[in-house]
Amino acid sequence: MHESMKLLLSLSASGTFLMFLLFLFRPLYEKRLGYGWQYYIWLIVALRLLLPWTLDLGIHVTLPESRLEHSGISASAPESEPAEVLRIKNEQEKAVLEPARLQFSKQFRKGITFVLQRLHILWFVTALLLLVRRVTVYQAFVKYVEAKSRAVTDIGCLEKLGTLINQHKIRKNVGLYTSSLVSSPLLVGFFHPRIVLPETELSGADLHYILLHELMHEKRRDILYKWLIQLVMCLHWFNPFVYLMEKKVSGLCELSCDEQVIRNLDTEGKRAYGNTLLNAAGAGNSFKNPAASVSLNESGKLLKGRLEAIMNYRKKSKISKAAAFVLTVVFVLTASAAGVYRTPVKAENKQSSKTQKEDIKIRYENGEYYIFVKGVLESEKPSGGITDGSVGLVLVEKDGYVTLGPYKNLPELLDDAGEQCAEMKKEKYCTGKEMNLLLEGIKEIENAYDASGKAGVMELNKESVVLKKGKQATLKLKGTKKKITWKSGNRSIASVDRNGKVTAKKAGTAKITAEVGRITFTCKVKVKKTNKDSATDYHEVGIEKKNGAYYYDGRRIRLFMDIRADGSLQLFNYDSRGNYDIQIKRDKKNCILGIWWLPKDEADKIIEDYLE
Image (tube, rainbow, N blue to C red; front, side, top):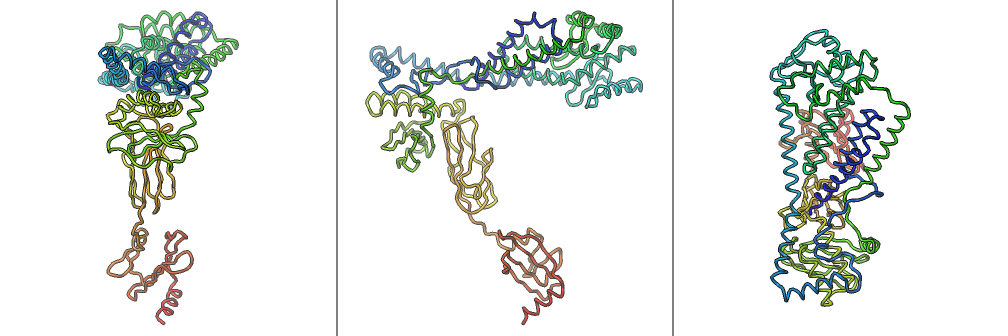
């Protein structure tokens, strides 16, 4: 299974666990804590479903690790005859008696592996289509509403809107429109929010509370919150619990917004606000609101609960606020502790794996993956190579080396190298320790390789580049989607940015490396000397040479002195037909600092000495 799917399933399981906790303890907090807290606590669940952060103190979701484990070979097998190798021996003995059954079993396992490795493609395509559909539906809804909407021109309405915007410190300009296509007030627009009212007569109190309610949605960025929930639903479309979460958040959005509006109202004000909600509960919109919009009459089923909440509202005590703060902290810690997928490590092998992981480094070169044991220099790798287009594996030790391959491509190496290691151990072509190091290297390569890609290799698009000073080239690492760390061995000669773009600085040779985990890929960059002469320098500062004469700002130069940092002359030119005298000064790097006009008496003295 692709690592992205393991991570996604882990995030989905962690988020579902948090939803279960909120639903389980709902009777304890529903009547004691405000709807605002109940609304925003779901934001932590949404972020848990999106972000793979974790604290190393919780329950972690464990998923199958790799093809090596499925084949029964562990990367941390003990030095003595491992149980995995014995199992492979037994399978080989059975293969003599039951070749057809074992062949079918092997093909079946490969088929299952093939499907699991590409499951993330189905998930991604479905998630993308769902997201596009939701965005399209929302855009269609906004265009539908705007088709017959018109801006409100009544001065009284606009003044009331402006007063409320200033009172509640809302930063964006909110437009006010009416439309015959809506029967309930609503707020649309993410970047340019607009309140759309139905074309009905509204009393002064109803208009006041309608505008206040919709402005509260804008101030709290409820549309942004709802789009975040929509993104979660698209990414976790296979999880039925996210649809329950969306329904719960939509209801709490209106309840918490009502709570925000009535927090400073007296009993009469609450009753007037409730009447506004009743008046807005018309026959329903002629166009179904998309899930990411906010409307005053969000749901008729929710209206009764909203009215009861309004009339029963009481300001929360300090104890309730303290309890809400403590519960929030506990819930955040729980969300972090319900961590994401991490590779399982057996307890008996945990320490040995940690030690072994520090023992090797891998360098790719000309089709070979060289695994260097700790303390072995890269210069000690064996000479020679393999056929172009093939892939091999070489374990380099102080007293020799062990090779695997060649293989036709990298997928073949990852599929068969584990069995070949076991066979080599059986035939005593390598020791148990060497087999462990080879398996560790194979595991590292497998983790970095993108099995869904078409590339049968994992390599740089260029192994050597020749550039002129100031020129650029872009390096790309094929066959992986892991994070790549780019480095330059000599940044004064050639630098490289985080996207692999190499910039030649000065003549010389530099080594550019791309690191993926413990695997290093290298490209040799040679920067050639440029033939840039003084004329090129002069052109950059506005001095041109025509027919043997120098011109600056359209004026022909009589005396032209180019002075180096040490006081010596790079150029001295006297043109009796010129009318202006200039001098150029350079720094220690021979770069032009600027142009100065020479006083006439000083220039005449220099010319006189020159002619003598």
